[in-house]
Image (cartoon, rainbow, N blue to C red; front, side, top):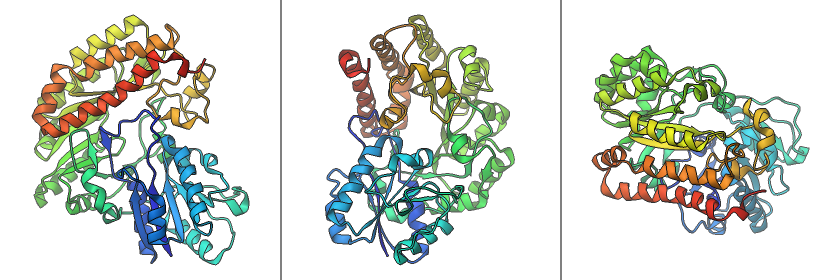
Length: 460
């Protein structure tokens, strides 16, 4: 069969950092690999990378039997819109929806325009699904909800199976994918799960509590095949396993692989392996995304972080000492006072991470925070596009919502346009990339400014 795979565009109303971080559709590339293994013809279209987004053109020219959409929390309405449009162009086309948001809330896609909602993906269930479509049967399939069965299932779901991505499927878009100032870049995942128990994080719920690691030899072989010079390792904590990390470095050196890496790493993993960072830097690790989260031990304790402020400081200094940038992520708590914002600003000046990003505290319903903040939610749980980790979700307790956005703006501008960050960006990235970064921050700032001066747009 012929299968058209589509990553939808983002809704313009969603707070997004697309101009800063815009990666390949890794999930669709994995699905493409499975389908091609099974003999199907696949065309991948990335509407996030296209400006015209002409669905009709692709359906008329490719003539697919199946159209599959991937989804995140910020594009549910767009997925349903495109599903409806697909059926109106040709009602005989089978429409499938999958992706991270389906794993979290499959019911959001139970629509008359969607035939199958795929919560988890394996070679086995994809084969069963394609055979069912071809033969027009209606048996239950693990991990799949079917419109023929009123989206009901008595079979429990399964875990996603790792499949080497079909990167050629997105070949025409690869030059557009970027992570901050690194472009073009490729994404690779080498492990699943997390050892940490951060109260705000849903990744542990999605990937499982245990750490499942791919053979590092397979990982390095995949990296060696990449055409891109920049590689984003998207594990929750790539630095966690000391023996595996040493083997990774051994293989890079043996094969003389020269690339630039960005990875996620926890404070504890950095502290535990201080002696390795000189070697990591020499082998291309140039930035580590670290969840520093806050400026007080009290807030860190509330987030169930296993590190304290002193640990954070030591970790940042270890990275700086070895020429590796800290891309620090922080959480904006709804109980901040004006004084807290001032203290936060002073802390950032003291810590000096090279890049800084802020995320409002999001009490996702898969975390314990949902029950704690349920009575203070600004948006209902099913207003999915507001739960994209960009908008303030919880009513502030110590100031008005308008004032809170104003304080965030006052914090964000100097935090992202300080001398440390500017110097880092202009000595690390080409001028063209820095202009892109500035416009990316500009898009986020516009959202906060809009919320400050248009309070009637905010829920009462």
